[in-house]
Image (cartoon, rainbow, N blue to C red; front, top):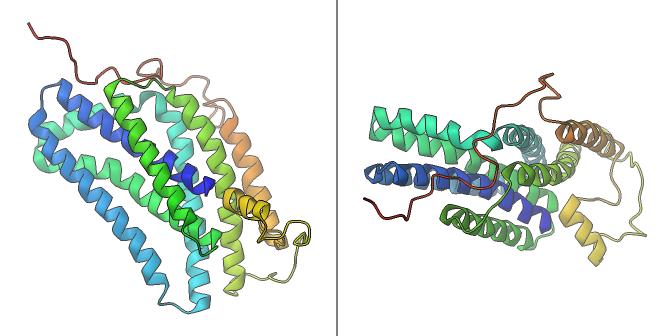
Length: 294
């Protein structure tokens, strides 16, 4: 449940910050007439993400067992690829996300209503689709038949909305760079478990060999139905009897990815400098002013 809460919080807060920045900029520049197209784009993006998640869940139920495992494994791998790209991208751009969005919004304002809808839709829609796919893959990997993973996601999203609102109102100060670094590192650990389980699905679908080649079996020490077994499963997608391929994939992904993610920004590209932050990484300075106008 905690891993799904983390997914909902991390992805939801990204979307909340995007909405916060867009709305605050329009209010400050006295372009309230553009708020309706922006909210329209946001609403369409949310509906698309919900529809995508529903299609994944209900569409997969009509498939055979092997087809379900093949689909689940393939989408789990795709979800890990997307979320890995996302955490690295956000780590590098969190400090200057505001100026980037402002530039896109200025261009959209010059082009008209349709461009505003498209800008808001694309800014939020990408986060929504990534969230829907990764949540589905994580819930599929948990596979405990309880609503706890979905409850965790819902609580994470609700927390993200609340934090976004507090951030917008100026009641909350947060260092975005540090926040996304810490949550990104934890999300890499979660993604490693989803990736390993995705390969296990492909083994069950007979797409990959080695289903009976167990790396170890500690089911007697950590029973899957025990409270601590359930906790490890929920947080890390831990399996007490993984295959050799699962353990290999888990290590090959987790160790280099986490090391690269925690390295200084610019290390991977050989750059010693990064773009200057919009501010000191605490909160946007473009929230609506409450000072009286002359």
